[in-house]
Length: 280
Image (cartoon, rainbow, N blue to C red; front, side):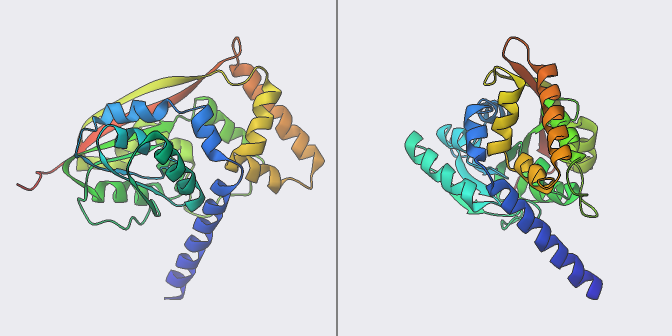
């Protein structure tokens, strides 16, 4: 009993830390300025049509939820961080999209079994610390015959390599937490979903980012708006040598990726259908 209580308390603390991290900076600016094209790519891949019940998990400010609503879906955008949902509500109103916004933990979704025709996430569920719990939940709430759609950064791509660089300066992860970029490996996702899905299609693709003219511009942007980067720098704030070393490492990473003022960031687009027969 004591171990169980301790585990629950540690999990609550971890989720609170994640919620706080994503509220740092201004992630919606990252979503809108750099990767806005990913949402429509995912919506097209899962084939959202009018009347479909759609859940976007770890939706942030609605990068894929809003396009899904504009495509006619009956959409719920869920996220652990309410500050991101607040921004999404405003953007949805400006774009004339009607959808619901709900605070929710990807590892313990507050929805009934088989509630949705489509369950998707755009560089979102990959950041939940317990991968199997997350996969089990996204499958649970998808109806038999329904569609799963995921966009995740690959370990070998630019963002995956950025997390590898930052990991050296971050505190050690808690027991049981897994690296986010693992979700960008097809074999890892297939293992998580197991025999509960069929018709799996997975493609590595890239999104072109042309927002930075030089490495330092990239580094300063991420230091000011991207929660995980801000959190890492805070962890080493009292160590000038480590701070300078991380500055240099991020500059070198960006410099290796910049070509004529643009970078190509690789991601895995994976779709599948939940096995089983939909109720008549």
